[in-house]
Image (cartoon, rainbow, N blue to C red):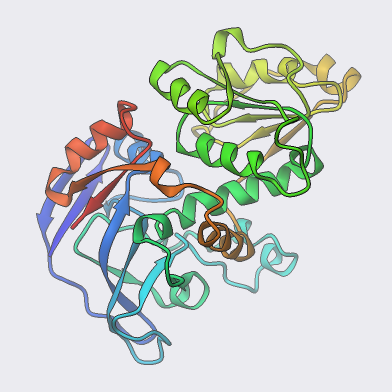
Length: 335
């Protein structure tokens, strides 16, 4: 089978490799759609603190069960998608409901979707693999992983996500999913809620403008935009300025990850005298993944707006260029 193997930073090659055989509790999936993601770009550029080389890239996917190991609980022909990791269920983080911080969840993350077939380990089969509901497209189902992270992030923001104005900093797919969920959040008056999206790419800003957001250049973002400010850039310089862009008593949500050792300078005056809160968000829990799949099934996120281009697996470089260059939010690689 073909697989896009990455041996280290800037070292990726589509290779012919041996197709895996599922062992007890494992599932072999024939990939039908695998989406580009900034995490894969980050891996290819500089590596990732929780995901070692070598590995086959790709983790947002949908597919069809090809073969199963004994006791897996799935049948050939079933359409499936999956979380990228699975909690152990027994560590302290898991016991208190913070499975996203499970100490062993990333010992064997589910990467390898940029390939003809993907082997799902037993632990992820038990706690992460999900059947795709009827009527949900493969490309929409493949958004499970990033949307679950967005669901978790909004949960971390607490009541700040429930009403009031919002500033989303960054214009990528995560920003788009945040915008769609905040715009349609139940119990809020969408017409009265001001959502501003700030970025640098004109084409991406136009994407949000066409869908009802206010837009701004990052350098010109208005002061006191509202109760919630969300960073999706992972840019330490941008993050340092965000408390000044929150309303008094507002919340700044740090959604995007930064490299190990990165430091951010924050205005202590804003945190103390204006009671601006800084909240981090990492990954998601199984409950977040369930909610994401339900939201996708209800059409809460218009998948076609986010997955706006398709490329054969052989054209992976062109797919990466489309997504990284901003011509598409996400590209579906089709084996």
